[in-house]
Image 1 (cartoon, protein in one colour):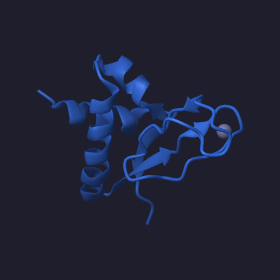
Image 2 (spheres, rainbow, N blue to C red):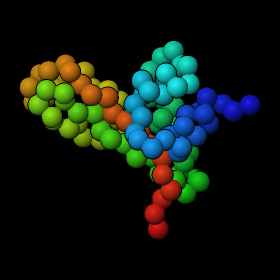
Image 3 (cartoon, rainbow, N blue to C red):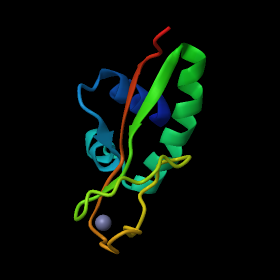
Image 4 (cartoon, rainbow, N blue to C red):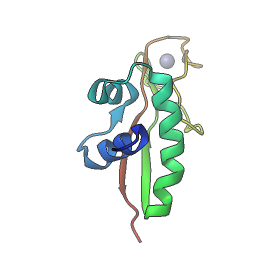
Length: 100
Ligand SMILES: [Zn+2]
């Protein structure tokens, strides 16, 4: 029996395209996105021990294209600091082997 975090990590290793927290919720039938953000934060640390690397496509503004800087957990920001739009594209994640 895999833990939820193991299932998320596996999903992110197998995916071809970066997945958002919403994608992960849908794929694994998880109720809350905030749970996923927390898990992803832990996964980003635990994958390092396995020679892998969590890649984050940062959140961006759907209106002006402003890209949010990579925060620790790459959580969803609520507003664009540039144009004040609340149309925010979610950050997305995938896991790849660390290149030497
Ligand atoms: Zn904007």
